[in-house]
Image: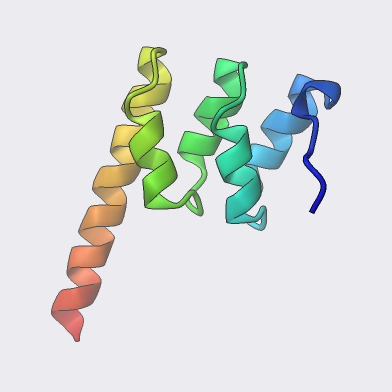
Length: 87
């Protein structure tokens, strides 16, 4: 697969893509490294963002991104724990 030059895609399009529930985990991973904190915040807010991406975002230098990623990690942990207890 060719490397995507995210800098050529307008920030509002990257933010929109990061919010989509059907975006691939690979794209979310790429967008998690975006220089625009609003794009990273959208990735952290997406319920489909993989936990390992949320883990990286939880250490983001922008507090609101880090906080949102932390919430996402907590929610995924609760859901995973509850799912396991049902089995």
